[in-house]
Image 1 (cartoon, one colour):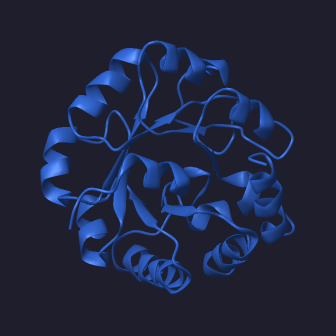
Image 2: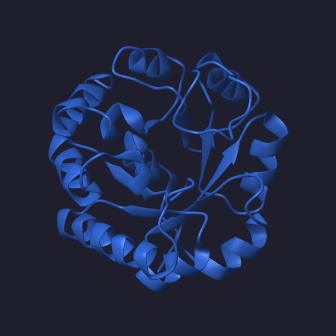
Image 3: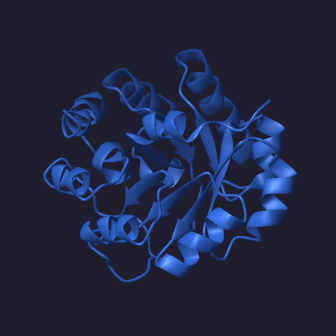
Amino acid sequence: MARVSAQAIRNMLKVYFIAGSTNVTISLPSVLQQAIDGGITLFQYREKGSSAFVGIEKEQLGLELITICKNNGIPFIMNDDVELALKLDADGVHIGQEDGNVEEIRKKIGDRILGVSAHNFEEAKAALEAGADYLGVGPVFPTTSKTDTSEVCGPQFIAELRELGIEAPIVAIGGISINNASEVVAGKADGLSVISAISSAEAPAIAAKELNKAWE
């Protein structure tokens, strides 16, 4: 297996849905299927929070979610948990700045996709040099979905990274909604990453369709 090309990753990042069991009020597999029906281009399983599943429950939910993704041709990214990513045969892993050494994780996962969160130019450059395929940059707007976020950087920050020579695929994250998605697209991001914009929507399929419209 060869590393996925930057252009293929850009296409995958367009509408990037992140969720775990704590982000939904109904069955996550049901929400995921609806989101896929609405046009999401990638799914990240992020099982975090005080009531999040651990151990076998986390693995069983992951297996159900990756099966849905594979049946629909949607890439499946595992948040943080490299061992579970390998066990489930995930398409890739996404890590934050505190979640491990990028070079070591690259060696463990081989040619699978590796995304790394970055909050400034130095972190972005270091992540790419260590083997990241794409960057998750944000929060571009205030968010309530994550409690461990850095200071809001605004969508224009991605354009600033481009001016500083960061050409790698970038997905924007943090507080993105149907109402502000076009601002993020204008700011030179390759993708919109959302949690609550889809997971808390009354109709996840419609929410995903509306987010896709930002790219038209």
